[in-house]
Length: 357
Ligand code: DAV
Image 1 (tube, helix red, strand yellow):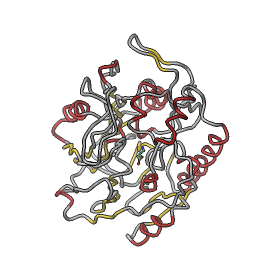
Image 2 (cartoon, helix red, strand yellow):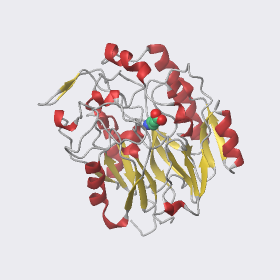
Image 3 (cartoon, rainbow, N blue to C red):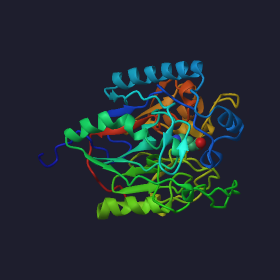
Image 4 (spheres, rainbow, N blue to C red):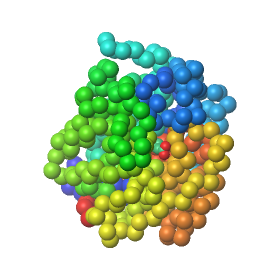
């Protein structure tokens, strides 16, 4: 490989021109079994739904509608010159067990952003903290093996044991400024979606699926080329940073003002944009997230941004801020816990490792 030649897997930030992504699938999506991890993150309105239906498939009509949105999204990506790759179909309704515990079923391969962290040329399988997601990375193994053969690095963080010591079963909902999580520091765990990259600087939040031990593991693994910054976030149900803090382009940061009250000093010369509230009606079924997924956007380059078609407020804001919104129906997919950022993981953006601060 010649110096400066772009490798097949290459991603350093959120905005270099996007050439290839993995797009998740709703095939085999299964309602996760109730656990303290869901109590700390999932909307209260659906707790009984999980308690009653864990291990069963999500309602068929909703899956069908979500898949229609996915197909539209892939067509748009392709017309914008981005290659979309898909995970292997997996039946997530099969039970999972280890010597320490069992779960009635898995979840899905809808959100590759949660599972795979791509740093430069390396694909890292995250040690996710939900028992139902223990084998989720297997849905991506055909792709990962192919990327490995094309020269990518491939790392799986030590598999967590996930015995009861990992969970704080006394967890109760924290108040605004309290920091309390449903996971302990028993072993390293993180979801890839709690991290977000700006070249040599990587930002992370501690959450109900990412502990300090996990952050320390990644920091040591990445070594001196990178600096990891832990953000102060006021979110009483933190899980994934991409509806809180979204770097859009060099010098341009989108934030959720309700959650990010302290912006690190290193952003002092950046434009800070505050996401306006979502236009989704409260009646819209969101099994797994808040309505802030309106800011869960995907940059195709420094200007083009994939935005949900009916989110008129944020579409207008993006235009005012000088971006070019590309619209796609995605409400039916949003139901399953994410939007354009969650549903993808960057495989290749055309660009190099730099510092932006
Ligand atoms: O606002 O509920 C959404 C992030 C999903 N991966 C929220 C977090």
